[in-house]
Image (cartoon, rainbow, N blue to C red; front, side, top):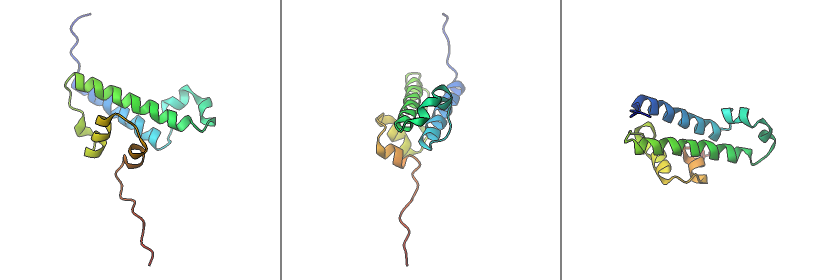
Length: 108
């Protein structure tokens, strides 16, 4: 194989795809994973596994960007970038990914 120069645009596109895939899995929306394993929809652990697969894909693309010295963090909020740097998908990541202010409404 010859010396292949990676395209920043290529990896930016792959990063955006992986982020969208993770966010769709986070929101329990249809992803290509559903097409690959349609029988899993019937099992409760499916959504956790689907999110794990999407998170792993996102981390893999970020790792490639880092190895190729392609900037990736500016495509995320500061908090999301910290979650990705932490590399562990936890309940906090699942709950706070979108950083919404869902504070309890005051009843008066």
